[in-house]
Length: 290
Image (cartoon, rainbow, N blue to C red; front, side, top):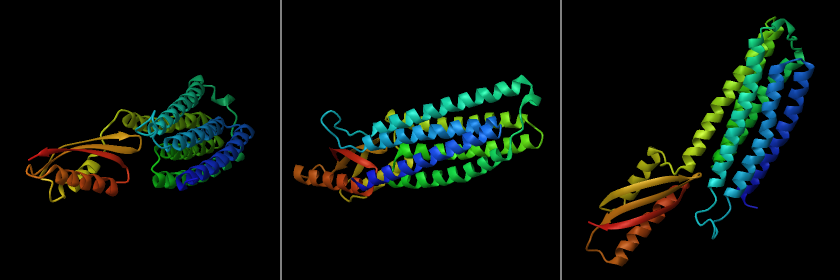
């Protein structure tokens, strides 16, 4: 097993176990403490278990080597996993928001039971736990350059934010404003929707062969032009393929050079770019005479 796969397995195991325990605790606290916001928060955490499994599968399969059927590799499997994560987040947010809005519009606030202290404790525990899981997952997502695990990390952060909403809602309801619990559910919905849109947007960009950030293109351009035998760069195109970048470049060299000399320059530029940029999977170089 490679080091990347070991990290994937370890992060997945830690987050799944943590989310299962947290879901059970929050669901118990929501029911025992009569808090709709905490029950909504528990449902949000339960989706984390599924999304972590999806992120693990996406990252694991996307790291497979290229084969005859997939000569460019499997990186887009991870984008697909991120799309699934985004849609799960979106649907979770909508379902939570609808329940909260229905309660608010009913106007029957006196019928809403006041939450118990256990719901307040659960909110605090959830905030601390989910923030720790966000930082833990984000650290390793950066290390292995995984979009799916970065999406999963933001899911943990959205859960921490939703728990802040739960804390405010439960606290307000305990102070005599029962509608605050329902308002907290709507606030949780908005937090999750924001993360869902960000995750979906990033995944769509990588599926649609979007160019890499201008900063990366500028660095690649500067590196190619730094070669003393490259007279100019006629064209540079990049596209995102999952978390990797494919580059097409047209360079100009002295027309009096032999084919062997031109090929040597091409190989030098090619190897220099791939060596200097970990996320550049391949660069195709075309040589023009100057």
